[in-house]
View 1 (cartoon, one colour):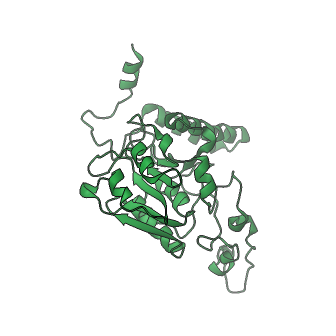
View 2 (cartoon, rainbow, N blue to C red):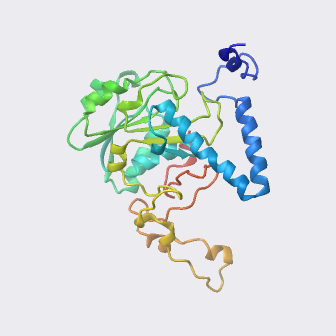
View 3 (cartoon, rainbow, N blue to C red):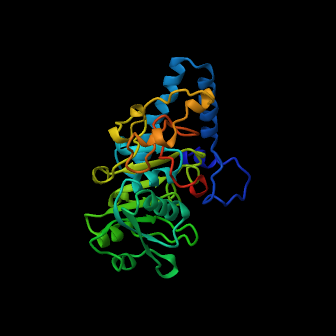
Length: 303
């Protein structure tokens, strides 16, 4: 039996399923690993936790291989929207984006602008048929533009942007931020033109929700000021949750309420983006997942 046939045989879902651009049914190997990890996490042994923790590095290496980059430049995220938030909330200047973009791009850009008190401003373009072409981008360029945010494949039409041509249009000094959710894992792409690439494994990779990532080039990391890099990484002093004062219990307040930082207390941490302390990872995020600020786009915009 050929290797290709082995792969074909893993598609054990009902025949005729064609909605892969919306959701890819989990592969047998993913289901097996999820159940195995759940068993390991169920006993709480340090050795079991270490085995599960190793999945983080493995996932980073797989994503890096598909991107053609280094595993150290890959961060794991609960959704691609979280990755976009880490990119856009750390920028200033004008960011070009199409009015026809998926909400994970447009809403995140708009709310990053609000959170930054307009230090970051959207530069909306409305190209013909929603196609973000080099000519459409070039018309919007000026000295205030610092980045272009674009979906690699349009979620409505399937139009695929030319990343190399867009890079040439914006020049070497602006960031190219790419949402690759609709294409990652099914199209062979040269991502070297991009500075930030976010994607997710729940579609073409059949890896399920919570398997998103964000890749940041060295140039992007120099330009972007993250609010929270995640617990395993370096913590900017302005956003470190360890620097927030511990709330004291007051008469008439429950213990649980006393443990929840108020906005007044949170503002003392000095987060430049939202005046709230970065919180530890939550929900389905992996151990290396960065958790965004509390004034982030709602979950309804994530993918």
